[in-house]
Length: 128
Image (cartoon, rainbow, N blue to C red; front, side):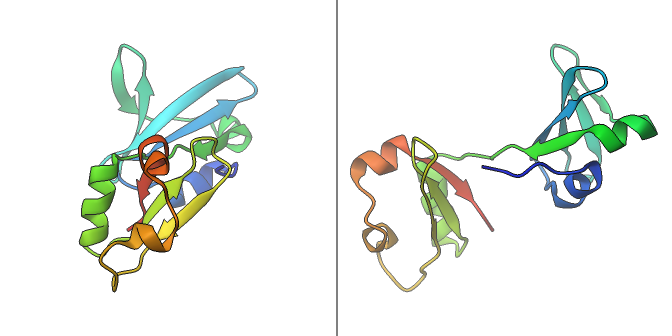
């Protein structure tokens, strides 16, 4: 669902707490980074925690990044909606998505024709 990004685009778009996955074609490897509250981007290493991301100039140009979705529970999504935030529902098969942002309705889900099954099996994101 998310587009491939250059390293510069990933740095510009990555938000606090989000994870980006990058493929380094020259090394035949995949790396993951996370943006911390301080604004720093840290390299995630399985079993080793995290460290500051340092990339060679040539590698930076070749990495293609994808920002991973930050899914939340249905309960968290509804709480965010009640606080005036936009939420996003994604179908279980990832073929449909709906942005829910109507503030002037008691139950926005009825406006979007989501079934009980949709609520349970779908994924949710908070979109500020």
